[in-house]
Length: 191
Image 1: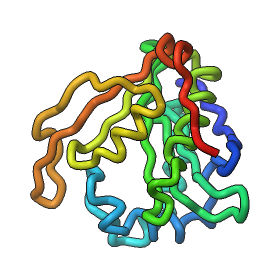
Image 2: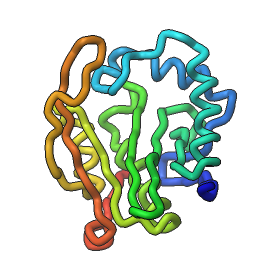
Image 3: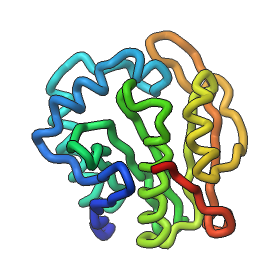
Image 4: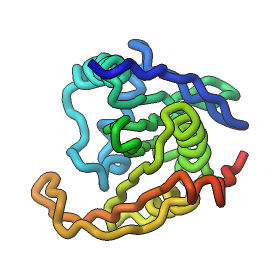
C-alpha cells in the first residue's frame, strides 16, 4: 500500500493553502456549480449538493492512498474561500504528478492561481522528489495556459478532441515542468 502523503498547509503573501474540512462544502458547491467557472472543465457543473461533501471525503482518501493532495485556497486577510488546487496522479516510481486549480470568478486576473500553484509546486518538488509535473488546459482557455507558463511549464503538445462535455468537443494543451527547469528559473508569484 502506498504511503499516505502529508497534506500540507502552505502560506504565501496573500494566500493560505490547507486541507479541506467538512465546513468547506457549501463554498465548494458554489464554485463547482458555476457554469462560467467550469466552462473549460472536463466535467459539467455540479447540480447535486451532495457532490461537495463527497469531494471533501475523497480529498482525504487521495492523501491516504498516496496519490496526491487537494487543498483549499483561501485569502489570508479574511479566510475567504477562493478555490482549490491539487497535485494528483502522484507516481513515486515515475516521480511525476499532475497539477490542477480552479478559482472563483472574482479571483481571476489577480495572480492568485500562479501564487497558489507556485506554493504547491514548491512543496511537491521539495517533499516528493518529483522530476516532472504535468498541467493541462482547454485550448479555449488561454488564461489557464498563461498561469502554467508563468509557473515555468513548457507546451509539449495538443491532444486533439480529447474531451467531450455536454456534447461539446474540445482540444487540450499539455504542458510539462521538469525539476531542472524549475531549479533554473523558479516562478515569481505576485504578492
